[in-house]
Image (cartoon, rainbow, N blue to C red; front, side, top):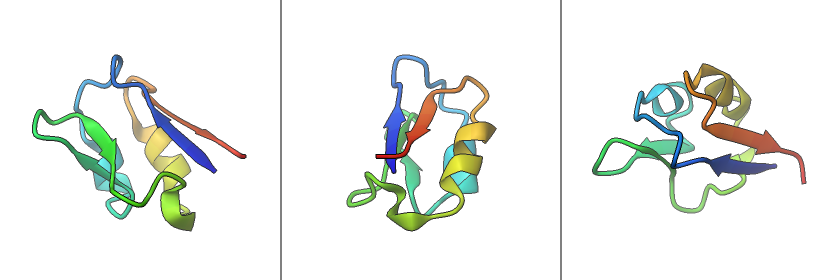
Length: 64
């Protein structure tokens, strides 16, 4: 699985970090970023739900 965050689209709503806190966090400006060591989501079943929860569709999830 590959997770991409379009930082140009992200508005910092935080839904990803609330939905999958083991994968996503927010940087100092409040924008979404992956936790260190989690570029593939670490097998979390919540990654796709976090992508769906994003109000601006800034997160994409692809199978490798």
